[in-house]
Image 1 (tube, protein in one colour):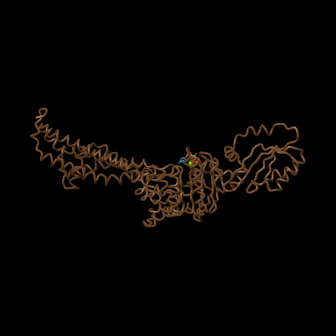
Image 2 (cartoon, rainbow over the protein chains, first blue to last red):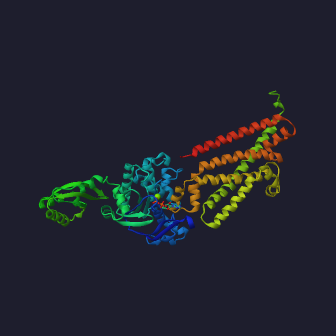
Length: 338
Length: 223
Ligand SMILES: Nc1ncnc2c1ncn2[C@@H]1O[C@H](COP(=O)(O)OP(=O)(O)O)[C@@H](O)[C@H]1O
Ligand SMILES: [Mg+2]
């Protein structure tokens, strides 16, 4: 659906030139929610703004739905932009227009007949739950309501793609949650491809199918969220995941404490339905080892349940070895830590 | 007799005509100032934001012309524009003859105010419209002008008030209106009464204009 090839963006010229993106390649599938995570200044906004050419890349190609946008003339580009909706951290609504007129804005740009505008806007007002606020001005709305107007406006021209530039970063956690649920809903309902950028792992974990980690203007890691989240490779990715988890120091102390009988610490990762099964106690019972859980998370990534436990097996080395291979045979991912 | 002034000597018919002339000059010059200044202000804004080198050159030239017109004192502009007024409206005196210099004097000033109010419009909103496929003309008509409306109305108010003082100055060169009366009677014949009444009428006019302007600005402010 979206293909970025060798995307490079340099701001400024000569001595003050700053490279915001260097040779980014990305391939985003139709109907997926694709997240890009990175620290402030990593190049996230530049990247997403290059997709609808609000920012002209210095080098590289942008393809959306089989068209190379970077080759288009001004009016053709305007045409194609109508099929790419965008929402923003600071909403960017017209302060002089009501909720209704804001949502109608893209329709009026294309001289849509009045009755059709009315039908579409009413439909969208209902979708985002703002029907009774239709006559209000943005200044009279809460942040979450403003973002709902932004979403409705972005959907008005029936886009194939929705770009979200830190769409929840200005919102409190509850509101963030309800906006993310709305995005997930419209993704499913309209099979809309969503690209979102964020600096919060929780956003990625809640709704994204795939994720790319951007650092210093380049993609350092990408893949399915379950893979990247549970098996992060790059240091920056690990940092993002660690900041979601609790403090590690008591765990490290427990791992290094001497133990009277033999002991081995392992990290066990459960994914999907296995998360809720009693595999661990069954296997340990069978091999006769005891175990202590040192740290654990059970949660979901989008709709996929997962668990990650750090467990210390206690008993003789052979029994522990058998336990580990049996767990692996049951389809769990086991990594020996010490 | 009040404070040694004798207002019974004031020719009220003449005062009425003078007020009417001032209002005519003001109304006509305000309309043409807006018609001329608004597009110039929009062009200044658009060219001033351009990244294209030769458009930046256009901006520099237009900006320079606007600055020159703004730096010429109005009273000198009126005299310098006498041939131009004759060519445009057939006379350089009276209500009609004063309108060209009033417009030429006020339009560059108003254009700058327009440019400034447009710059106040949130860039993010403009980008959102660009992202939705809006053309430049659509951005001007549907984003910039509505979003800048309170600022533009405030600019119009300031410009019209400035025009009031310009119409009074044009009295120096036979422009007609209240300024003309004040100068002819007060300055040339030492009849203070007419001058005082003229001044009071001008003050009342400015107050009313400012109040109306402020009210409009408040009505259209949504932030
Ligand atoms: N218009 C601009 N002019 C110059 N430098 C810019 C501009 N926009 C962004 N940058 C620079 O590009 C880098 C990436 O910025 P951005 O894409 O906004 O990062 P993020 O959204 O990840 O915080 C930063 O170093 C930033 O300072
Ligand atoms: Mg950003």
